[in-house]
Image (tube, rainbow, N blue to C red; front, side):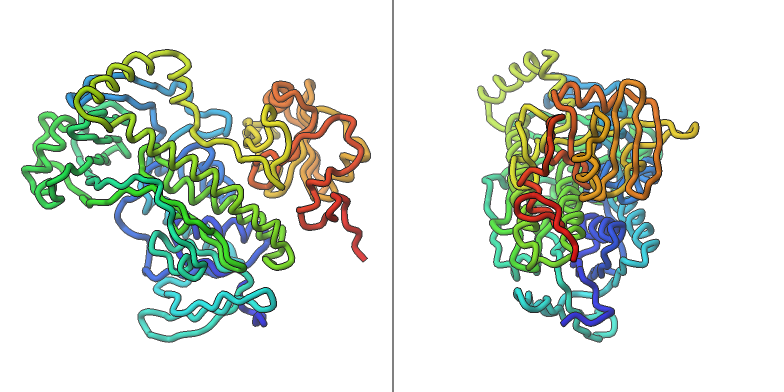
Length: 536
């Protein structure tokens, strides 16, 4: 039995994924405890890229505006050869796109983790215990909660907490994954790369974007992360060692194409580390009360910058479902199973895209490499190819219990987020409609739509040609001028869209709908036929 002060959710790992989970759960009214064996954020840079979909998650967490102060939008990407001659160039002229944020941003991970920790400290429903590790995990079963023995590393003191749910956000060597009994499926990519982070007070004469070096002799990536911060990633060739590459003369030789006349002794190397980039996905993401997120569930090469993005998408997908299920994984077992059935295919496609992108840009030798350079320089100049490179890489969610409808429509995609002006102040849509469900419609609310809105405790958004009217669950009403949502529904060929708390379109409904579709039966609060359960 759970003690009164035990948390319903125990989160193992206080990286970006675990912290995001805890904050989102707190915003949904669910209490959690986060345990982390390290005393503070890892001080060295690791992840450096987020896209606009994921920045929208940070918006729901409450740190997006602060994030823009520690990050810089990416102005585009160039594909270059080994001599840095441009094969193709993709510039971003518009910084804000359909999600209301820059399409791609660069940052230092320690800065983001500090923002997340500061935000978590503002929520009484979320607690962080640093320098605390999991010593033993009893996963529980359908009749009893998980029991987790924790040890405070500085003192050796132990205590046991019980939890309805345990979230494994504990990285590639996950203890929770071992308790789940999962193994990592190899997607057949493994390469050793050297990652170099540098600070330089003198500005380097480089392009303000990302360079992808398409050279089989020395594949590499370069990006300017901040005003004085630069990152390089170099593939380590067979027979080479990290020691020889990171020796001063080896490092100077690697960086010389970008540093120009800046002496090597003016470069402050923050970190140089050799990593094995892998492509792997856990075969199971859940066992009863235990769930895997982030690197505990998947590992991706960095070629499309989606490593941290994938973990934050996990957090956004699972947190609202845990809140809707009232953290009871037994009663709502099939509902919570949709976390893995949605996220696992999505992240697998993303990892395969990263592997394919890495090969296309860096693989092959001799004739194959020459042919690749020729094709890149020709094909990537075509407008459709340029547009594809600048669009987001995230695919729609597959159809399933919580994504239903024709895939010619918006089901499984994100609701766009226009900027709205309220009382002379520009606001973003997600901030106005709140953390729950939303129903976006072109028509006046019918009795059926009114009942559905009440059943989901949703915000009702009337997207009309004369303005957008928003009715919030608490009764507040807003009217704003914006054309985006009505045009989005028109392009989709639908009149009404039901939007989940993670801003994914669950389904669309015809104007003549008069009852709840059976697909709603999986949601807590609805009967298996899709009807709203009557409280006794």
